[in-house]
Image (cartoon, rainbow, N blue to C red; front, side):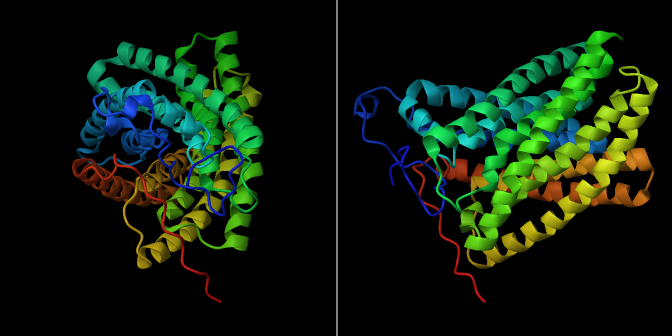
Amino acid sequence: MAIFPQTRTAEPPLHVALPPRRADDRPGVRRLPSLRHIGPNWYASVMGTAIVASAGAALPVDVPGLRAACTLVWALSAVLLLAVLAARAGHWIHHRDQARAHLLDPAVAPFYGCLSMALMAVGGATLTVGVDVVGARAALAVDVVLFAAGTAVGLAAAVVVPYLMVVRHRPAPGTASPVWLLPLVAPMVSASQGALLVPHLGAGQGREALLLACYAMFGLSLLATLVVLPLVFSRLVHHGPLPLALTPTLFLVLGPLGQSTTAVNQLADAAPGAVAGPYASAFGAFAVLYGVPVLGFALLWLALAAAMVVRAARNGMGFAMTWWAFTFPVGTCVTGAAGLARHTGLDALTWLAVALYVFLVVAWAAAGTGTVRGLLSGALTAAPVPPRPATARTT
């Protein structure tokens, strides 16, 4: 179906249908048809790869060869970022009509938040893992540039996408999707990644300002998530399961949960030397008092989402780019659990982080294999088809 601002659908479409043929689609006109359907959701593959490196480096255990493997994955994420940036630039240059249509599609527009998170995920992995290859000065420079660009894009997406949903998209009641969380969680990623840069600033106003700015972005993202998450759960309860291809997006809810837990722990690490002693101690206590309950809810949602995915798989769910939702959100839970293990000293949290990391690596391998196969076959760059509906709810 064509997408217009006034469109109402029972379920938000996964992709935008082809618009009428334009001048640049006529035979003989130079164009790049393979880029037409490369949407902003492709940045999820960059995020999902970079988090494998960052989460592996954050594990509170010493595994032989893990650091070297994480370095290789970081290098792959950097190459993927450059490739997707180039592809998206070609998409905007050669297929502006489709790019504009994406902004008017309530199912696609939220993925613009992924650009921000992809930039910062690679930047953070460069500072924590890539430093072994490029050196401390170059790693810091790369992270600063990507953090600044990612934060600017993320804050813009956190405003522009909800604005478009109100004035242009106007989604119908009962169509809330976990995808709506993507532009809202980007500032939370800025909060956690900014904490890594705080110690690199000289003592004084600048260091304290960055720390408190990160806490402000933490609050921005958290409160926005608390507004949207009830809509998502209400949609599931009152309207049944998501369409099969969209079922993996339920894992996106883990993003703000795990990332906020990661953020408070990393900010607590950065607080000493940035703020007065009593505040630094309070931030350390807040990391545990906030992180433990939120991680508990994240585990509850992980079990619910996993059960829904198993149900969808039994009903014929095949591979789609939505499988990348199994990676970055779970990775944030790994770093969140690792941070809590660091601050509490509990072995149980250490092994929880390890178990989640094993799940992350398996999910990353599955999503990556499916993506490579789809690219080689041309299925992922072809015109999209509407998602299969979910089966009827049983009583």
